[in-house]
Image (cartoon, rainbow over all chains, first blue to last red; front, side):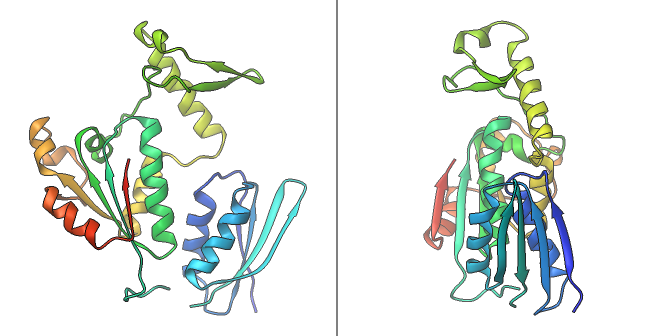
Length: 75
Length: 165
């Protein structure tokens, strides 16, 4: 399955969420969007976003100021 | 991704301020709520009408903002209210703010407003204050409809979140 990447590094709230929302619309249900961000607020934001939208937060990890998320499109 | 059903939450807000700093809360909340599946309505009135102009020309002032601290050379500079009375100070503060916004990867108001429109955020312009300030419909962007207090109240009674900004 092809993985899709969104580079949201250097972008501040609410851009990571807005860009992710747009990117998710362009992938199929079940596919995974990988997101790179530098905004620390994005960690909790993506958790809330996934809970509210029925998308699955497959992975959320941080590495020296960079945050990586993988979200599977739910519906 | 989301269908409008009985589970859909709604956010309504009254937007009353027209400065650059106060433009952010309404547009950030509206776009984020829309991204999270809420139906959003923004009612722009009084100085909030400035946020609907085709050509945005927003600024900030040190006046009335005693908590304003600008990052400066590794520390922060408090901006005393009185400074705002001096010519050029508000223009400088506005320039500093715009610079910071760009440097920190924060979205511009133009970008946020466009995102709001693309997410089908309902925008209503207060008819009375358009008339009061003699703003012309042509000076505003195309999307918003004109309405009055009753329009807002009806929307608010159906909304889960109601904000006054």
